[in-house]
Amino acid sequence: MLVIAKYEPLLARLKLSTLEQVESFPRVNASRRRPLKREITRLVGEDNGLERVFFMKRNWISHKKDGIASIFRNGAVWSIARQEWENARALENAGLRMAGLVAYGEECGLLWERFSFIITEAAPGQTIDEFFRDCRDHVIRHRVLLALAKFVKKLHEAGMATPDLFTRHIFLANENADPQFCLIDMARLDRCKNPSARTRARDLAALNVTASPGIISGRERIVFLRAYAGAVDRQLFDLIRRRMKRLLTRKKHRRAFLGEKL
Image (cartoon, rainbow, N blue to C red; front, top):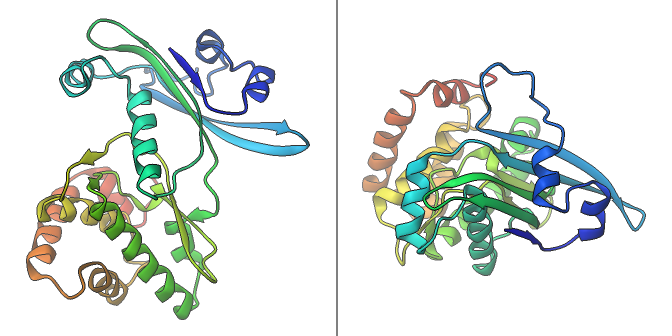
């Protein structure tokens, strides 16, 4: 299956308009000794005189359990790429901006996927991690924190939640006036009418643990939480703290929290 939502002539010029072309496109990390599970490639092309930047994610190896689970969830095997595509559409329908969808494709067997890919436009602006690292204006930082809390609250009120609510997955544009946010990499998305306190705490802990204390202060975290919850919610705070303890047992999250390069 192949779906191209836009930029079809440009994808054809880049030799990315068929599933076979995408699969055979030069691999950036082909020299690695261990087989890659997934690979992200930055693409640049010209469209009517304008430079377009895309990101192509190719999924080479998937967990068989995910394919089987997708059958129970969707009635058919959905690849990781298709799940991410459908999640992005659901988020957009809820009024939450996503990196522009360009194309996706999948090759699936009876029980799991064999290969899939998704191409999106580059998200506008910079990650919120980069913003808070570089911005020293307290007024602008405060404005962005309040807007971010409103954005996350809107996500949950729309009946959606994600364990991948990381600072590197949220892009910020127009921070000087009306901060606008854009999500990327939403392959994992829970949909329910009213996310539980535990689910919301899971998301908030992911956001918190990927924001290094050297970048966002404890006071700013309280400002964010109050803006999100309307007041200091002790139950929610305790759930976030417990979840953070679990996340920090994992090396990658511990290194991110300490501000180390991954």
